[in-house]
Image (cartoon, rainbow, N blue to C red; front, side, top):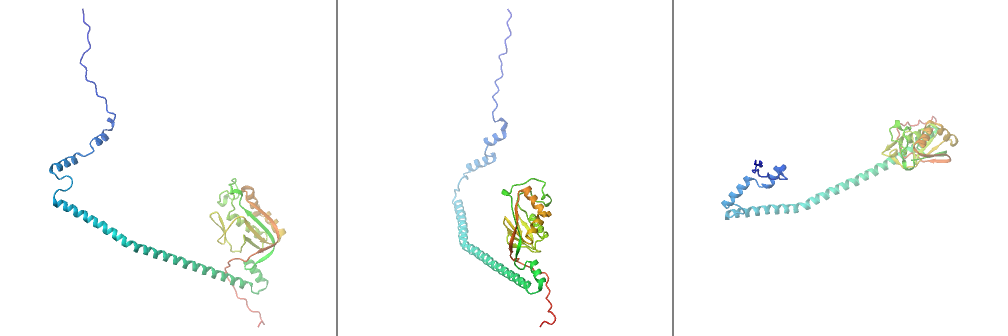
Length: 301
C-alpha cells in the first residue's frame, strides 16, 4: 500500500509583528537615547573619580562661596544704583514735561496775538475802504466785501441726501473724480456759487460767511471749507440781487440745471425762494493787494 506524501514538518518561526512606530526610527532613537553617549561616559567617569556633584574640597567650597557672594554683591549694587537713579530720572522727566507745557502756553499766547493782530489789520482795511471816495469807493467796498450789505435777494438751502445713500452711475460727477454719493461736495458748492454770481448776484454768503472774489471753497475729507473754515450742512446760501429775476435766471442756467440733476440722480435736497430783505456780514478777513492814495482836489485846503 502506497503511502501518501506528508507535508514537511519544518516550519520557519513566525515573523514578529512590526512596531507601530517603525516608520519613526529617528524620533524613537532620540526618545530611547535622550542622553548623548559622550555625555553619559563623561558623567560615569566623573562619578568614578568622585568629582561629580557639589565640590568636596575646602578650596572648591570657598571658591564657590566667593562666587556666590560676588554675584550677590553685583545684584545688590545694581539695585541700589537703580534706586538712587530713579528720583533723578523722575526729576528730569518732570522738567521735560514742564518745558513742554511752557512751550505750549507760549505758542497759545503767540496764536492769540496773531489772531488779534490779524483782526486789527482787517478792521483797519475795512475802515480805509469806507473812507469817502464817491461811488467808486462804495463799489469797491461792496465788491471786496468790506462792509455789511442788505437788500432783496434769494435764499438757497442745499442739504445732503437722506442717509447719504449712493446713487446710480452715469451722473455729472464722473469727470470730477468724486464717488457717486448723496453728499454735497466742494465742487458742487463752487458751481452753485459761480452760478449765482453769473445770474446777477451782487453779494453771496454761505452759512454766514461772506464770499469775495478771493474766497476759496475746498474740501478736507468729507467737510467743505470756505476760506479754511468748515461748513456744516444744511448749507444756507444767501445772495443779494433782483429777487424776481435772480432765482429764475439761476434755475435756467447750466449750474442751476446741474443742481437739479444732483437732486434727481443723488437725492440731494435744495430749496430756492425769494426774500424781501437779506443781510450779509462783512468778510472776516481781507487782504489788500494794491492801494493808491487819493490825490487831493485842486483848490481844496
